[in-house]
Length: 116
Image (cartoon, rainbow, N blue to C red; front, side, top):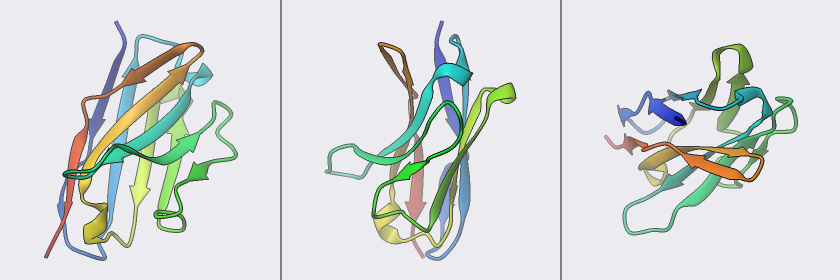
């Protein structure tokens, strides 16, 4: 059974930092492209960041480039999203996604609220 479990969400002040984690199980993690998406209230889900199975050549949405960093630890089957200089516009539910060959897996999401 495939599981993606996000953690690390919460309330943070503008300018603050948070690190999200996504623990994966039920598939060969090292072979998957791992992604983070987010969905703000009243908006469509959007791409945030991606990291290939090799762990190099990360890709970021323009809105988070230079502030967010995606990384992975294959031995722990975990992907991370380090978020710095957070803005109110970053408020959203953040979802972990795994692209594993022809399959697409999603976590249930974790809420990030950036507010003073």
